[in-house]
Length: 388
Image (cartoon, rainbow, N blue to C red; front, top):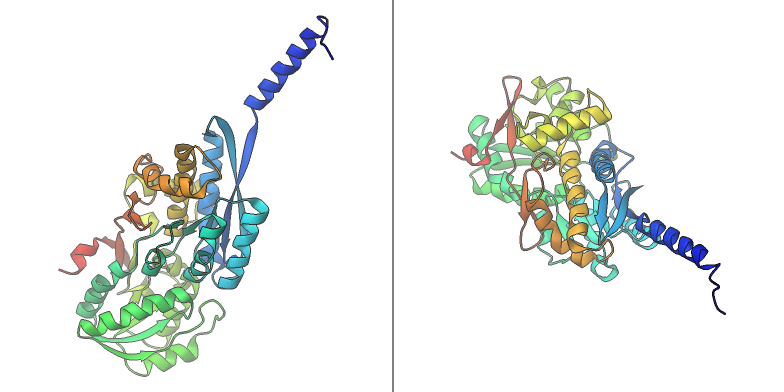
């Protein structure tokens, strides 16, 4: 069949229209999240989602182009109720149904469950947990977002021992992350010359009444309490301890945030003598300050961002930049390989976590700031200064 001269203009017009359509064609890439969006840890999960949502809106507004093709990012967030088995089911759904090249997950149990198959099913585990084991497994498609918590243990221990004494009562959560913290903290406390007078793990995610557990630990007269899980239930444990007459200090795992806890305890006074990570709102560096202002604009003037929000915001930006650098939205290994470079090239005002890259095993390189509560105020402090 031949094309007549009369038909040539029409053919040319159709070809031009097709070419124009191809130039403006847009690919949609689904970024996955599985985490607690209900139950006692719901706020913790929502903080992660908020940070990711902010980043995705900014990326889409600025325009993302990968290998010459316009790309739109879309978040698909699924509730796993903090259960590792549910996290694994959600991850498979995100990868198989939505073709997500990366899945963000903010709890170690879920991370371990996903690491059992993510290399085979070719997706990146964006792991928001400070558990050292996450990057000790050798999984080549994992990025551990926060620094490992073992860097906090000795300085936190030194501070609390000098201020309050060497007898600690342990009231950690019973979830996987808290178990990992406890396994390292207990021996470190004893190595420093301290005594563990009681140890009573509790379900921070399924309970709102901690009276009997706290009473049992306080009966042994501890001078310091080791606590930690999501901010709200951790604050309830602290509040219960104060109501029962505890006068000592609190050594708080990095999952809980002092500013969020203060909203539950009725201010910072009940948290006097605590040590934990520095809330984003008290971080004076350019990236965190810029992020905090944008977060309040997005979610309300009374909403203080947490490191869950700021760190996952930054890594969502890094993931998008890594796709651009790798020239692909689907090759998980190629994208994973470029995340470190994306962090080193990231503008200061977007780098809300102060990240400097990714190390050889897949952990981010970052200098975290911590805080104490003294005189009813949150006081930023460098980790190195605590051990002096």
